[in-house]
Length: 251
Image (cartoon, rainbow, N blue to C red; front, side, top):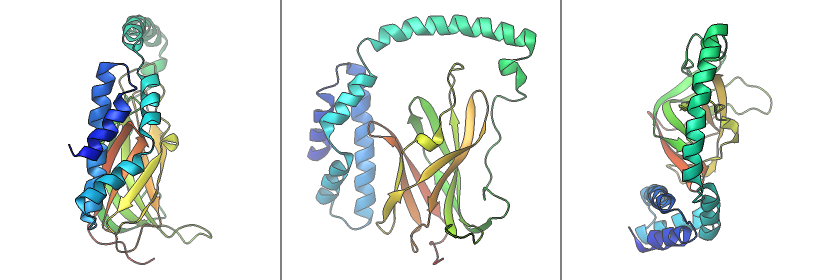
């Protein structure tokens, strides 16, 4: 690990009390910093400068550390065990009741939602095919990227004509949890031209254990051919990679 990354992770972890949370935070932060620096180096930024810029983009390490410490209090393991036992008991009771009354899980024909298709709307057209990769945990939910494509939208007033659309799936195995609200997840991107911006996510279909949805980048930069997308907040993030078969054309 390079010195700027080590120093940043040390500053974050010095205020986290739970040893396991420290280890996980260091691994996640290091992976994010390395991915960000690698993306900058591909644009021609020298390695040392890329490392420093990646650290600066993360923000205040002590603030991140305090937020992670609040999420991973030393009291959490003991409480987790207690709530796990209670949760299992509730699942058994609710499963029996829902089976008898055809409610809850038994009211659904499938535990998993159908996958998203591209384009997302029937009046949109495919411009350039692509691929998407990457998976990880955000807020306790597993988010996975599946497919990507550059789409031309109808010529509505004040509406972008080109969108980069990515199909996502979100899953969890805790039956008492609601599905992740994708539109609330922060999402930023950097592309092969060095441009950056914000993307947005939306949910398309849900089921008891999972949801499917879209990640959308509006007005992608002409000439860009790959994108690195960061989902989540510092310390609780995943990195997705999007590759197009051709560069983004002019609108």
